[in-house]
Length: 263
Image (cartoon, rainbow, N blue to C red):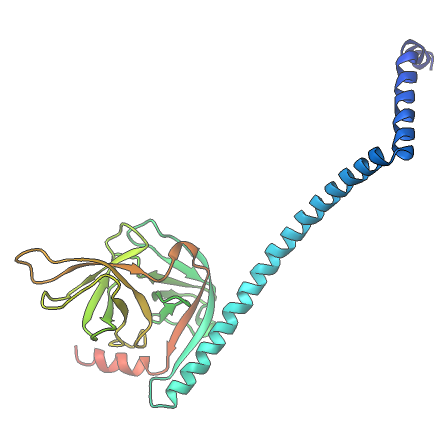
């Protein structure tokens, strides 16, 4: 106790000074409009900033939920369109929405994992697309998850055609840039121009005809060669891929069995 009193006596002048400063500040604040409004304005700014941060966090999580709902609605709409096409004697296609939970884009053998598996009717060999275009093909299926080999994998070959004339080519990836792929087997007698649209050919049960793939970025035909070197800008942005759809063809088993029976 004595020690405390000594400290108070030693710093009494300083403590009195601080008390007077606080009192003066309070008097000025409550008796002068400008300082009072300035203090209130600063306090309001702080509160507004805090509210903005809280709102931003809420919007982030709300946006994620909205994106999932939008993806489900897009899938439902695509299924309605597919049902109408089936009524016109076309292949019965059903789409199952899924979310990408793992993915690589900078390897030769890229892959992605989706949150759908055998319990959802997913099986090896089914196609994967998104709202922009082709994504890849299911390769491994677990109960709750599946691994997909995307078209940005050097082992992928995808049958495609030109919209303008139905000419068929094979899409391949050279392992360099996930924004582009190469279209092979396009003969020199073809006229290829930048901007030509490439879609799935429908020549396999994996993808129905007409799913967007990309557009021709450039084409080169060297003297003496029989085939073009064609660079295709892919519609699917793999760097931003979040939601996809599994293409479930009701006739896929039968078509594959018939094809395998000819081997």
